[in-house]
Image (cartoon, rainbow, N blue to C red; front, side):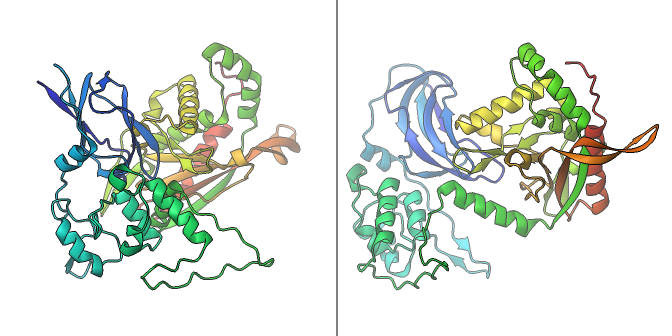
Length: 445
């Protein structure tokens, strides 16, 4: 009987693990190829994992709430014959025994034991409780704690002893994500007197009125913040600016947007027009389309443009237009609109948010005239497009200089000064502006 392992997919260059949110299918269920089996979450996106084959779900190797490394099997699918006998949750936990992680190096050459011990050694985990502030995989009572729960406990300074007191609503009394987040909410609303761990009082929040509202960051916001800090620590950022006259481009779009929608079935926004100019400029300056690996520069032959997209939650996600230089303007428009729509509705596939080589963010969407964007690692440059505004400008004509009302905007390019010098960054930015200003207002559809 053939069996196929369902693998935790790679979700992005910097993503090494994902958390299982929900098993859509259960052991014994029939699954069709490309049908969703489970839902997962990372710092960048919540996604669905489809089945690579048709068959029957034979085994679930990790429970909901478990954080699993990329590339590991999370389930087994039988592709022919009858389904195997369904497993109970306790059987799943017994069969799945992850190997103990290797000791972590503290940087001074002395390895330290990991806080997560193997399920094969609960006694060792119990012994370690008295010397750890981060809860181990098992508590003194033998109750199992998922990595997700343990990470939340660590962030909220919840000791092992305090964690043991939280009522669990999961299988066999397990503490779920909902349980611990509910506990944290109540814990902040009233002083905790049962905590055995000495904690430093939180600093007071200054307020002129004396009244404040404390809002807890959600998971995605915390991890986005971490990525932004690491990007600044990794790359010495330089930002260059240029003002662009995009009057011909605006006039063409205004004259053709209805006909474009009727012919191609999709709206023509400014974003695909900007991307078209960026792609042309990258062909002229290919050393912008690179990444850094240690002391090596990796030049990417494919031009994959990431476009920062605001989500209803206020967070950002960056879907990627693969091989953007191979797409026509209608192709770019359809791809941009499709990715943006599915991003806002949490329907992106894992591979659609990875592999970017250059990123564009449109701060003009929010009425901003310019910005200083942070580089999306491991890329080396990111372009911000500002709001297009009518302004008086000097125009050279055959009759002399005149003042006319023009559509002007600012472009901002942040780049990694380790590998992109001012001459390259400035010339690339100017080239984008040149392509936008040279847009043919008589261009056909």
